[in-house]
Image 1 (cartoon, helix red, strand yellow):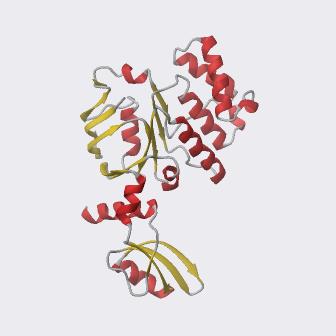
Image 2 (image 1 turned 180 degrees about the horizontal axis):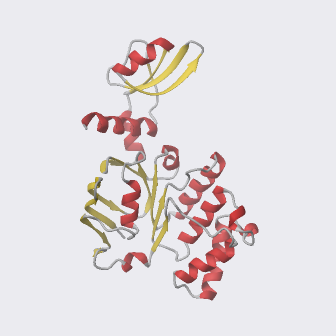
Image 3 (image 1 turned 180 degrees about the vertical axis):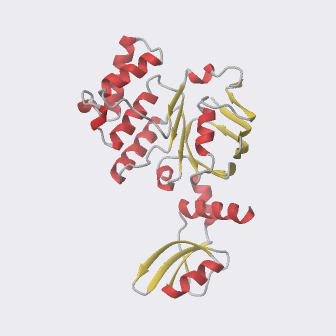
Length: 291
């Protein structure tokens, strides 16, 4: 089971290329797609969900070109877009009934599937409540339930934790991890922690291009020996930024604990264990410098 992206590009009139020469092969498991806002993630998601067409390149689902046969993927696709909306006057049960009918599911089997999904996303007790009274996290759980109605082989979720509180974000990430199995799950986000605990593969993009594609352990290993912490006076932070890639800083009175990436650390710096956020920031910085 493969979803193959070959030299994908998307050009918008007056805006240029939002996606350029993007090549990737997706297989079962959770792939985290990381990139800042404006990197082209949502454009890529819309193409893979067959909502938009590429301006260049092609997408193959198990060898079939989606430009010729988009329904081959649509039949096995679950999609939770970034701007997922609901009908606030409907209950969770009514909304999922409506989506199931729109997807052409048999009414009897659909109702059984809906009950299973409501239990899966922990909304059984709220199934008769109007969606207008749901929290952001509860609406996102309804969103993942509608995406799973047809038991998809490919699940695409775009910025699913935006606006959720920390507890809801953790719950949602755990749910996505549990859903992977034999599915291709593509999780698009700009929040590193969203993929850190669930993704077996991380793809980084910026300015519409593929920047990195590796397992989390490989990304961490690539940063080993390059991440440092140093304690400096508050007045020394800006000069430090001018010489090194400074990430997180923690102020303590008139001192600042700075975390930085460098092959030539400043005097007094101590080596620390790298994180995925270090790798992400380093890749994005290298891209900015190159451009």
